[in-house]
Image (cartoon, rainbow, N blue to C red; front, side, top):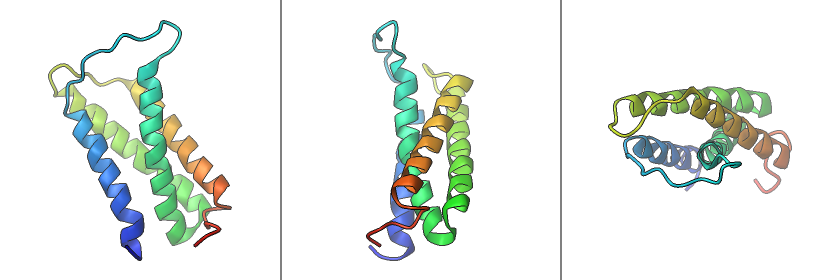
Length: 124
């Protein structure tokens, strides 16, 4: 893959996976009382979205734009999946989940930008 495809196809594939999971009623797994595994899963999944968004956006316009793009992309996908869950039996929308999505997405974007010097990867 070269050009825009190498940046946007992984992003689109991950968004499709996140949206697909919004349509699936998952059984509740037992959780340790002191650890909220659901929020960790949300933050982790959206951290990858933040990384992929920052990678694609930084290739186009640089680090600051990448961080703003990551915020809006994560907010849109996170809000969209929460809205979808309102209509799926066995699922419910949760603003705290959206908060975990945003936190994970921003941390992922910041980690990418920090690791790759302002959005310019050392190897590209």
